[in-house]
Image (tube, rainbow, N blue to C red; front, side, top):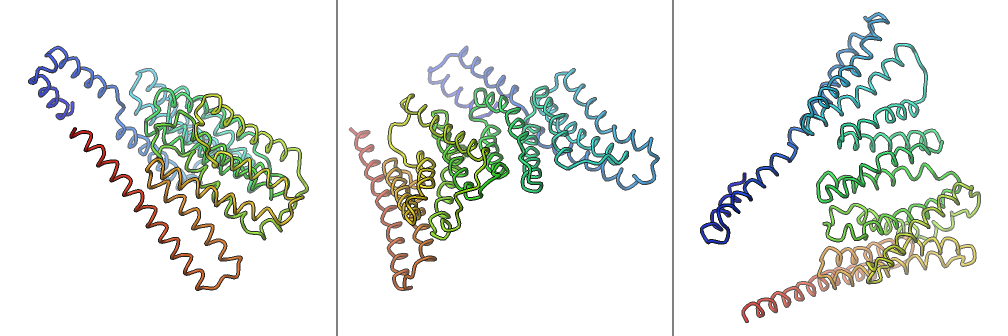
Length: 430
């Protein structure tokens, strides 16, 4: 038990705030809580140890591989798999602690991949890299649920993303199996949201899940590449609206990967499409049924999230970021009739987003949100320097104005916070 807790309990006991029985109950609670917590350091080093042992075995076998007959090679090919299964079986039968389960599951995960690749090499079984990855990932899925392994969950997301990129970006095929792979671990993610909402492991999943989807989305664009801007900004809008759900209400900013990725991604996409030459290269044709279907699904998800927040009365103040994806989609669709106006509308949308961020930051006394709004406007002005003929004197004056705006806005926030603190002190003194 931490000495600070024991000292505080002794102090409360001396001050007759609690009695001896209450003190002992509290001490027992913290002792039980400490024993129930997994040894994170042991788990980390156990997983790293499994990786190093596995790599060491592979290197030793690789060095002497050509000297072995085929029968010996076949036996060695199944050794990593057998050892991993025995390790997992022992861990389950003895009901070892989570650190043991993480280590055993990680070792078996790589054992599965090693055995598949070795058998393929021994018998010259030809196949695509994508099929090898898919087989490996699917065979390892039971480990996530059987061992309740967080490490294998992360490895599953990583390898599923690699599989999607290999099949889509390098082979020009649509990795529909990726959707099923993500759905396969979704129950684990949702379970962690309920049981361990504030755990660091859950926070990491808040970043990895959206990052995996973000990286893989490009594999599903089969028709006109210009539609990619619509699909990505709709995805960013989905991320942002997920980050605004009541679940993340009390979450720290670093723990809300959806909100950050959604907001920053939206601004970057809008800044890119704020250049007029981008719209000149758009070709509004050659759409496939798949493109229409994916776009409609993303729009429905965005509308559904916003409607759910309206229904739950959590959307109390207007936030343009939540509607940016739908607005951009409308501008994109109407570009055929509003020729030349699309870049102007995008620039106005970016300015509005920057101003709203500044207003929200000022209302909530958040320096980070306030400065984020200023950065958005600064980035937009910087972009316009590249496609407008403005003299260097005017550019210099604009940057001076922006710098003064940064200083003035932050000074205003500082004065506001100082006044609030002074008022609180006066109330306490009264």
